[in-house]
Image 1 (spheres, helix red, strand yellow):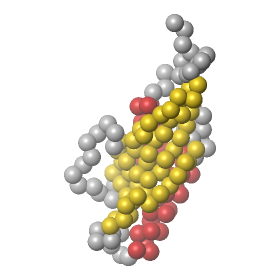
Image 2 (tube, rainbow, N blue to C red; image 1 turned 90 degrees about the vertical axis):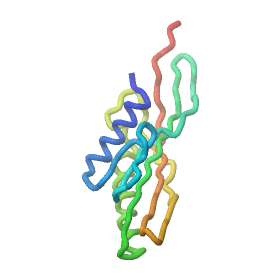
Image 3 (cartoon, rainbow, N blue to C red; image 1 turned 30 degrees about the vertical axis):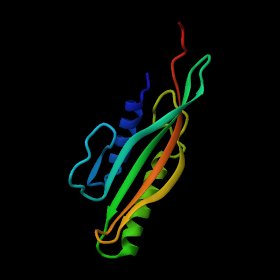
Image 4 (cartoon, helix red, strand yellow; image 1 turned 180 degrees about the horizontal axis):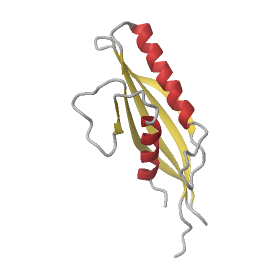
Length: 140
């Protein structure tokens, strides 16, 4: 049976396999580290909504992927690095099921700049990916 953990683990694996991160981890099941090494990527379950309940429950399920990049060389270089990573992540997830049974292909609902710290040269983007998870048919 496909679960939130199954989906999150697959997203983590796909992102890790890009081999361009210093740090990749779940932000929902692990304590965030005190020190973050860049570029970093965090994945977490953001919630779900029931789409159908009969005869088979279907949930619309969201995951957030947070990308953080640090570059002290200047704003343009930091933005270029972040933009490249944003595009790379989206191209690996959007429109795919990633081999996960019982889901529809992921849609990329949004990608937004969610933090920027000029003093640290850090820029952060948050992606929201949505899929529909088909639960087992209720038999009782």
